Structure formats: structure tokens, C-alpha cells
Length: 265
Ligand code: PGA
Image (cartoon, rainbow, N blue to C red; front, side, top):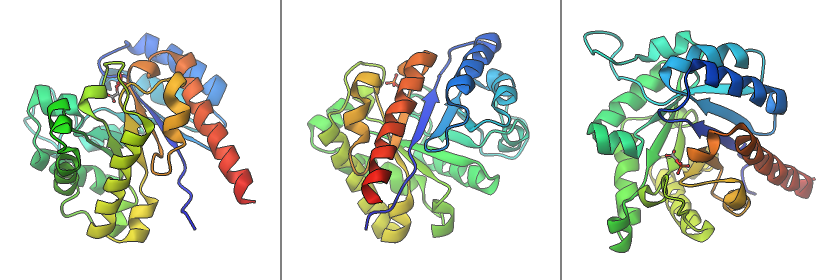
């Protein structure tokens, strides 16, 4: 019997929207989606918007996520934000190891792994991102690349802690390019990632981990991606900036969930 995994639809706003725009978006989102419970809805705004969005989300079913975090508890790290600061603003998820952080800010697997541990210790759910470049895919090396990123990212994580971790497969060539991985291409890598987790931890633990797809997911292609057995939601950049398209993505996940639940009754 396959394990039921609740979909996560997470918006990654990147460096977009000021606090006023963020508040307006959050209010509209809560109005449309605030009380549904079949899908976990997460918004990851810039750090400067966390408080405004958090206020609006209070008492709703929408959750707050951050886009980054420093691994140290506190100290002389100009410009950085700690896990405790995020917890204080009722943040529950944090994106770690996004390819833009790896590419533009030189984040290594070891540094991402430190952050994963800090997040878990502070009751934040890491959304750990992995993904290959187009050159790596063309060379047929994508599984090898994501395996390395995954195993380094979760190094030292216990099986119990794995339940709090979310994985995101984001092929770099699909991010912000309008070029989406086909459902089959994404499913192949998602299944491989789950297999790697099963080997490293146990198949039971691996079957509970939510693996999100990210890379030009939008309302037009969400259905076929989300319908894949190992795709448990989306990490969405561009299409999460418009509240109507974000809501459509939540509705797509909701509709598939309802179909799955009625099929098991
Ligand atoms: P995109 O970004 O949906 O704009 O491709 C996804 C991401 O980078 O998380």
C-alpha cells in the first residue's frame, strides 16, 4: 500500500515584493485558501516581509517559510538571519541550498548541511534543494549529481529528523526559464531520490518524505507533474508571485488529493 503524503505547495518569492505588497498578497491568499486543510500551503517571502505575512497567516492554514538562514546561533555575521530569529516570527519552513544560493553566493554542500542541522535543532522544516545543470543532464549525470547533493545535505541527520525534512528537486535548467522538466523526467529523478533515502535511512522513512518539484511549474503544467507518484508538491518561483496563479496551483493539488482520497475509500 502506498503512503499518503500531503501535498505541499510552496511559493518562493525570491527578491520580490515589499512588505505592503506582501501583506496584500497574504490577505488575498488567506481569503481564498486559508481554511482548506488538504494541502499544505507555504509562502516564502523575503526576510523583510516575514512579519507582515506572518500576522496575516495567524489562525489560517497557510504557513510561513524563509528563503535562507545562517547556520550559527548568533554572532558577527553581518547581513545574516538566524534560526531563532525566524522562529520568533513564527516561521516554520526554510529553503536551504537553493541553486541560486549555491551559484551566486558560493554555498557548498557542507555549508548547506550545517544549515540543515541548525534548522532541525530549532524546529524549522528545511526544504532542501537539489538539482543538476543542463551540462550535467546532457552528460547523463543527473542522478549522480543529485545523489551527491542529497547525501551531503542530509549527512548526520537521524531517521526521526528526516520526518521534518522536505526535499525539492529543482533542475537548474528549468528554473525561471519557462522550460519545465516533463512529468516523466521529473518522476525519474524523484523516484531515484526516494530510493537513495530508502538506502540511507529505511524504506518506511523514505516513503514519508515529501519531494517537491521546482522549475517553471505553473497552472498549465501542474496537473501532470503533481499526478506523478513521487511528486508531492511544488516549489514555485515565478508563478507564485501572482496570487491567482498561486491559488490555482493549490487548487490543482487539492483536486488530485480529493481524487486520490475518494479512490481509496
Ligand atoms: P521558477 O522558480 O518557478 O520561477 O522556475 C522555482 C525556484 O527557483 O524555486
